[in-house]
Length: 435
Image 1 (cartoon, rainbow, N blue to C red):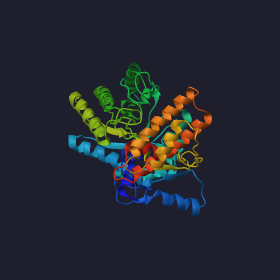
Image 2 (image 1 turned 30 degrees about the vertical axis):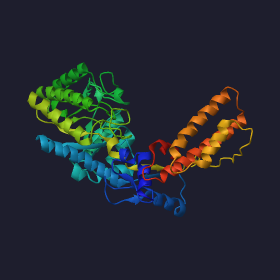
Image 3 (image 1 turned 180 degrees about the vertical axis):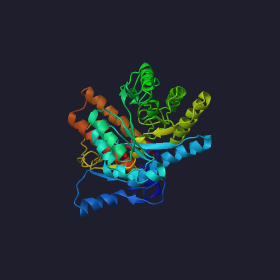
């Protein structure tokens, strides 16, 4: 397959925009997956699927998983925070936590936890079933097991069993007598922004927060408050929202620390987005920042506020499950019935003497099209098709004439596309016909 065709394929599907360097096209025109961003090693997805279908007798659809991509995304996340901490002289650590609700499959969770000793990877569970699974996993004594979601008495007992098993358990509770979660006034941006902010379903209001602090102090249990959890939403699209939220989170943390509560962790929740469409904008399917920029803004903003308030830098906990897992799966399915070429199986057209002039002119264009005039003839075909529809609406041509003209139009488009693909620089206006 020549370079021009490969470039056309890449432009048509926008692979470089959304693949983050994990996927590309090889010289045979097949999609290939890389274990790391722009890694020279690769695997041909077509060969993999052919093997599964022909040799293993599996049927489509098939979901392919690449654990190496999970590992690389974890390295990207932790590396970004490590670089930010070193750059700004931040005096605390980063604790990545994987939210099990994002993908509770055992092989996914275990892939992250195999590096728990190196990256302090922890887990976040939001149900009793997830908590059972989390307790059974191997974690280092330093990594966290954060319990979110609805909790009844049996859930809390199970969490305490996790403590006895050597887990570093943090129970995040939204009740006044057990503060572990606080709500931000600042809202995120994007489709899931409503899950954060002062009208959100998570966390405590400011007055409830103060009441919790009072109850803890009266009972002499200030030392039990170890973590503040802030949730500003998922798939945050605008970096400005992150900065504003971190200012407020750091301010609340600092004020609480000044009141004598030894909070050591600031959990900023999720929010780190994925650029699904490659536009690098504030649309719901994108974001206008990089992972490194996100980490820089979190670290710098929290540090600045804490230094201003005279509070120690908290350990930063992130629950960036979307970013950690989004690229590692590929769904392969058959869509042949949906993508039949527009020129396939067209009936043969015979021109009669009494055919309307627009029909005979389209037939002449089809017979005379070549590599020099294909684009001009394509434009003429579009004009003739519009004229044909206008005449039909006015009752000047029959339904049979309209059908004959449409067949000629599709054949003209197919010929024009074929001529374009044989040139050194295929015409972009014709690329949509190749879909």
